[in-house]
Length: 575
Ligand SMILES: Cc1cc2nc3c(=O)[nH]c(=O)nc-3n(C[C@H](O)[C@H](O)[C@H](O)COP(=O)(O)OP(=O)(O)OC[C@H]3O[C@@H](n4cnc5c(N)ncnc54)[C@H](O)[C@@H]3O)c2cc1C
Image 1 (spheres, protein in one colour):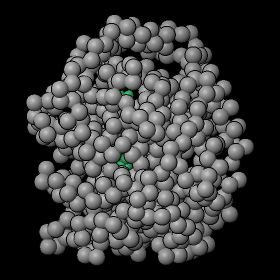
Image 2 (cartoon, rainbow, N blue to C red; image 1 turned 90 degrees about the vertical axis):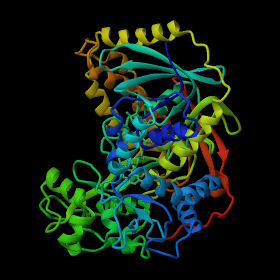
Image 3 (cartoon, rainbow, N blue to C red; image 1 turned 180 degrees about the vertical axis):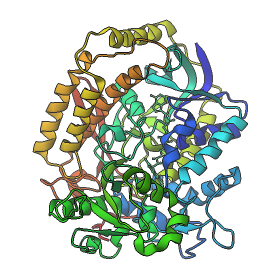
Image 4 (cartoon, rainbow, N blue to C red; image 1 turned 120 degrees about the vertical axis):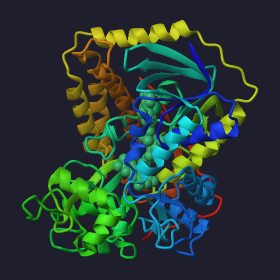
């Protein structure tokens, strides 16, 4: 059995930042990062637009209080304000620290870090490295893992969280290279497994964003929080769904309908294209529904609207958002200097996740914590984003709460012993699970079942929701889930068997999808990204509370937890 003081699952920004903090706090601790991709290939590397912090380099009147207020208002008042306060207060410090690690941020002419406008932020506070910010940060963090001697197990798939008597003791892993199973025990386990965009058929997320950490947590009997809040990013490139960063609008691009109108004037007149994402995504979806979308031949009534950069001029486009220009050129043959880009909403981000306190320790209920189990980043819900996240606050959450969680873990494991684990029991159980998958005769291809599932989630739990449509969705998913024992794998080998990984990921998708639907069905109001056509208003008297969903194959039990309000009383949200 492998053993480390701390094992972190996930090599994205949150996992790497935590590992660095543990090593910095107590260099004697033995830390491992396990990831199913190489850490550098975590989805964090794809982050484009930037990271928010009130450095005041561009806008001297900015304050952490303004950042906190924007975040709470953006969250439609569901965020926990103690967590938001820490996020906004610690932001300048973590960004400067990243710079000291070597991150190459874009600069102002006088050499200080540049800052741009972003949706829902009242000041220019988003720091960036052109439109490749995640790339710049993750590379430095991974370099630092090596510097601090963190053990990296890359391309190891984690199958299971070992949780016994309310204590996390370790994980069960599958080495993708040779199919070998291992139990890893540790004094603390941290999940930093990212999002679940692949629950839907059109997403900006990479193929590995399948919600495994969420599913493993749910299957261990622990709750997931606020899973009904799924962020649709307004500008996914049509038809592929990859992201065109909000930075493009931050730098001045327009959204245009088939009549040539900047339609955001009808939805958010004061913020226009820089309204928060939930509002902008609904506005685009409404324009498309009303027949003011555009077809590929330029005629009205089509499935997308235009993102128009032409007035920005080639110099600004190529210096500030070169990657977005390149994406549109490479993927759909559009030269954004001369042509508008076709865009529509795409699934982007998970506001909900594994419930944690502000030290990253996982909650087993509203009041209780799980021994030895921590989480941070997109898979966690602390909750700083509430019902809707503001752009450039997620990288920030990964770094602020990655750091906080790392520090808390370094203290937590002092004077703790490695837990006892019946290794053979877990290996045998995992072997059996894999064997069943390999040997079942089956009649469905994985792709068939997964596509049917993703289409079902997209149709039944999208930008607009109703009870009837969601109930139908839940039934369909239960039926589709019954096909799981009938999937057929062509590849029976143990060397680089990516098919077996896809089969395991499909199981995660099912668990996460069911929880999203069940939580969404029960929230009979509209708040942030969760929009119910049958309950179009926000309802604070009944639903100003966090959902805590407990999964079991038989069904999902929903409980609720109060929102922490310390600074800003809920108000009507207008832009
Ligand atoms: C295209 C795009 C652009 C974005 N741009 C921005 C931006 O400009 N600003 C901003 O603030 N936010 C942005 N975001 C959001 C932000 O990038 C993510 O929320 C954040 O990077 C998530 O980091 P993470 O560390 O939580 O997880 P990730 O970076 O997703 O990493 C997850 C890790 O977990 C590992 N893992 C998962 N499951 C398993 C398993 N079963 N076994 C082993 N390992 C596993 C993966 O291998 C990976 O290493 C963007 C997101 C996308 C998709």
